[in-house]
Image (tube, rainbow, N blue to C red; front, side, top):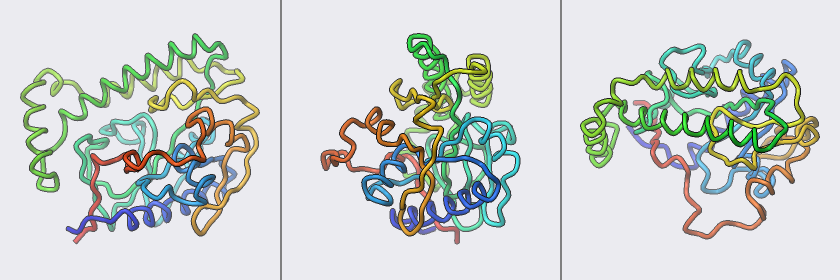
Length: 275
């Protein structure tokens, strides 16, 4: 199988994003580009040149509608509540026909192709110290989950020899983790999120994959309004408070990082065209 080039991967990601955005807009589901995708829209009017994924964020009530209603002729949606062997607490829309992924940190126990991430954002306690305790607890659970997923990697010919050797060593060094089911940790994360998310508050955060830092503490007025920004050959919705959101996350976000940091973030995943 031939590996997708970065440009091919970006192009495929964009087609999935168009499908998701079109569905959301037809069904009144709010969404915003997030993380590096939002940064790319503002700074590059498209992909960050070295970026290899797409992130979409939705308020929890919109995420719940999306995960229930989404249908596509080309793509499928998975999260841990509709697929028992899914090991992440957020959702992904992915291809099953043209591409296939190989990863040393598996997220689902089935073959999937190119995907984009769909993150719910939840109301969180207004008190910053309380929020940070919640966030840190979920971060510990997520790190434990990733450790278990690494041990559960299926060593296949699609992995390089170096990665296969690493999988072999991990399985022998952590026999107890092999007995743990990463899906159980995701259930714990979902339960904790439901318990700590207040019915009403003035702040929001993305808790399902808590690795962005506690600056991800959105005010109501940053995310209540939406505007469209250009992204490649299309336009997509973003939160109107995107400038403050990006500054809180990246500082001077219009300045490019040093050249040695201009690298794809998902180097542990390889995507191939199916034969």
